[in-house]
Length: 218
Image (cartoon, rainbow, N blue to C red; front, side):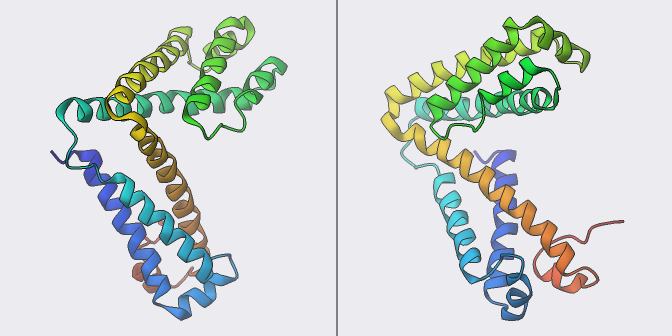
């Protein structure tokens, strides 16, 4: 069954694909963008990243019911957790408190290995829950202890689902984690790309339209 998430992903990838291939086929546009780092080599690198995301996003047809259920459960829980984790890390990073800074530094940079990244997150929430002053500061910005505990609980769920899925598919869970990371990398690239194009082609809505970039509303 095609979900709303699948449809959004397909739409996003199609929009990025259009922008990349338009530039690769329009030398005049690429010439203007080259001074901002979007030369032939950079655009080919972006195209390679896009193609890798498309490849990883295709679920094999031979997944059985349990494997598919575990896979979708893992992706759903991971997305829910990251919504908490990214927001909580940002709040802690912005605090002037010395202990808060120490806690944040233990999660930076985020480890590329999934299990080590999860251990970082575990340390982050354990440290938060053990520190009364930081917990109090979080409460002042509407993050109660119960929310921190909920995020911490999601770590346990991810570990459990990870173990169950690995029993079913061995190391293939790594491709799911790779996909999520590459999607973030591609989205970050595209957000910056859109920002630069709106600067370069300000007053030239036709070129932005060719690239599939909506004209920013003032």
